[in-house]
Amino acid sequence: MRVYVLHGVNLDMLGRRDPAHYGSLTLPELEGKVREWAEALGLEVDCRQTNAESKYVEWLHEALDSADAVIVNPGAWTHYSYAIRDALELLQVPIVEVHLSNIEAREEFRRISVVRELAALTISGKGADGYREALEFLSEQ
Image (cartoon, rainbow, N blue to C red; front, side, top):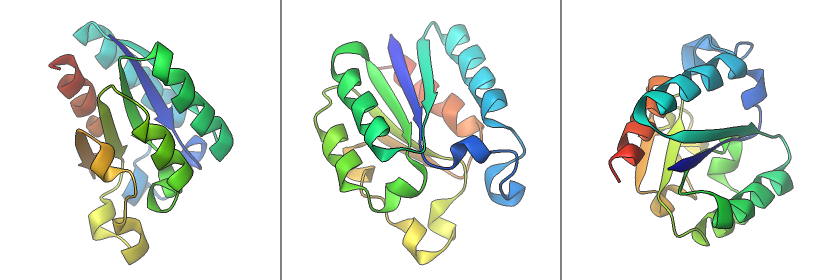
């Protein structure tokens, strides 16, 4: 199973952002863990990060023909990007929404997810382990 792991805006700043919300791992460290967990589960992952919403949408379009599942952490786009939501809506594969921080316990605007209803599973507030849980869920599909 080939899984796209798509990180959105500002996730390239992991390790510099508030560790109380996002942990201390950098994005390369997080993606290293994701690759290890995926390999142990027999999954192939393609990890990508961008701060350009149009690039994120293009990767979701690419996933239509290249991915068996998608893990998304759109970052702040989670709360308002209907362009990303519309691109996710095209997918006919399992989608898991992951957030490092507990968005339900944060500011009011962060509690809104325009992509949640398209996800087979949403994981929030488990740090890097949320990605492990997402991969385990997908390996059982």
